[in-house]
Amino acid sequence: CVDNVVVKVVTCRTITKRMAHLPMAVAIVATSLLFAPTASPLSVLPESAVGTIERGGIAVIPDFLAPSEVSRLRSDASSLHADGHFIVDALASYGAKDGAKDKSAFQADKDRAVFPAYIPSQRREGPFVSRTLGDADGRRRLTSVAAALRSDLAAGLDRPGLDTPDGPDNHEISFTRFGPGALLARHVDEHHEEVKGRAGWSRPTRRSISWLIYLNEPDWDPSADGGELRTYERRVPSAYSVGARNGDLQLGWLRPTPTDPTERPVFLDGRRGGVSGRCALYCDSDDGGRRVYLTKEFESDPYLFLSSDFFVQNLLIKDHELGKRFHYLEQPKSKLTEYLGVDPGEQIKDVSPLGGTLVVFDSVALPHEVLPSIGRERWAASGWFHEAQQPAPTGSRQIIL
Image (cartoon, rainbow, N blue to C red; front, side, top):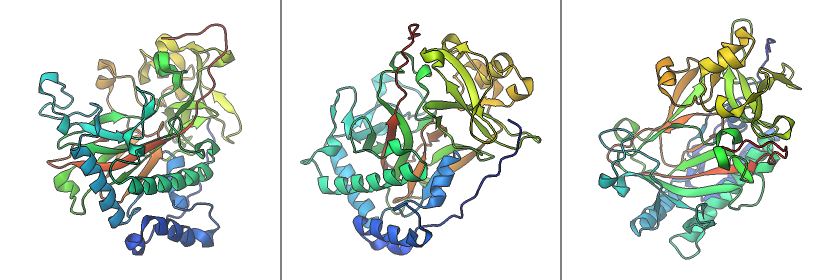
């Protein structure tokens, strides 16, 4: 893993603001016509966005939805929330102490609440797909736009498994409301099966692409109202596609060096010999045609759960020069990782939650957080497009945590 790799940069194109007055369905057609001269297979998404996602960044597309559609969806969400149809998931934090959860003082209206299409804990459809609640036609129009977006991503990212009919196992979609002061700590939206414990191999699909469209009022001022999406992109964009490789999810990075100025995603083969828990880390060869293993086989338990950058760098990766380049996407939280500090290979990119803006990124590869909104409700439509998960290992020795 030492040869230089040339990254092709696709020229950015933006969707013209003259489309802002068009209805949503017409905007889809207009976007398709706008990109027709380039022979692009994409209908609603600029090709430059695909390149950004593929290299581990966040694609930001202002004015993706017309103001009239943003207003319509926000009005629907606000009315449904007022009528008690949202579900508080208690994942956000609020109050004087960030992260504090005093159950006796919990205020649902200040936390994150969702209006989902599916409720996994109850294994039933959620209120988003109801034909009798609120503006069902407006939500169906949004779902159609999301389907066009998913088809574009499947083609542009060469992830054909994305382009399947909507259902509880392949697309999560919901309205999302953050109450005044609510925030969401840094995280990634999907993890490798081996770090999920007992549920790791039990689900048929996993999150592949994260997306959201902001539904806030036109006068939202990020400097006064907050609520930005803070992302932690790589300073050097990846020279290879991120997220997964033949079902093996990404676990970390090899930082660039003067002799190898290439940011390389590191993947976890978590089923060596068809056995859960028998693991090894690898990256792509310079030509992208084969795996270059960085470690010998090791057991997921305890190594992946008691680990840190320092541990992997010095004990798992035997080549010291490669080892010191390794960094987790998200280190397991501990006093040691707090002491060792942040990854210098990251840079912060904040996205303002302006109404109509679409953001899209890989669910595995991009750490992010939601900064607190200040005195206002923060509205969005959000979701995850799924791909099939790897089949469960069939080896006789299973490590189930």
